[in-house]
Figure 1 (cartoon, helix red, strand yellow):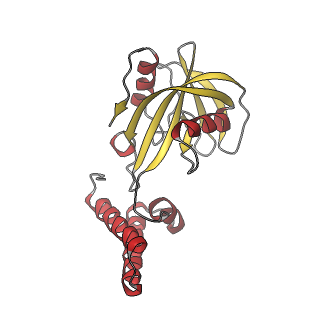
Figure 2: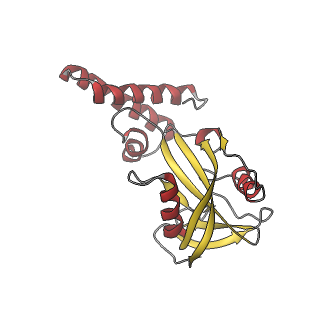
Figure 3: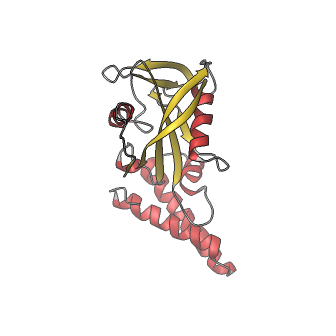
Length: 207
């Protein structure tokens, strides 16, 4: 994964090499070296981002084994040609219901879970709209590689209740969107969901 920032790319490559070495290496002295390389990569990202050490360790170096992308799922739920969005409690910005894919769920199962937890809606995924490399579409750039899966979902039932993550829920027209959480979804991504809704021959986008 390349972010376009050389410093970040170096830190990411060091972290990936260290993670693989810690998993596959057998020599105790080599493992100590890989551990130190990982610590250096973390220190580089702290210097670059200014984020607390524990947050950087969780987001950037919290995985084990061969490094693979994380998966984020998003539900596109429509009513009367308006899309359902939830307001993030911490930032007061709006996004499609969604979040990290749980290890024991498929992406389709996960998007159902996230829609229920964040919007109170019971939904059924009916189409995979797109699988996108987050850093090619969302800001800010992250050292962690993330694949975003957008699903067109049919609303079956449910009612919103304020929860730990979201404190509001509403439907919006494409020309009247609220303040968006750009890291979670952009206007272009939401427009893509509207296009998928209105195109019976929609083909999943992979990029």
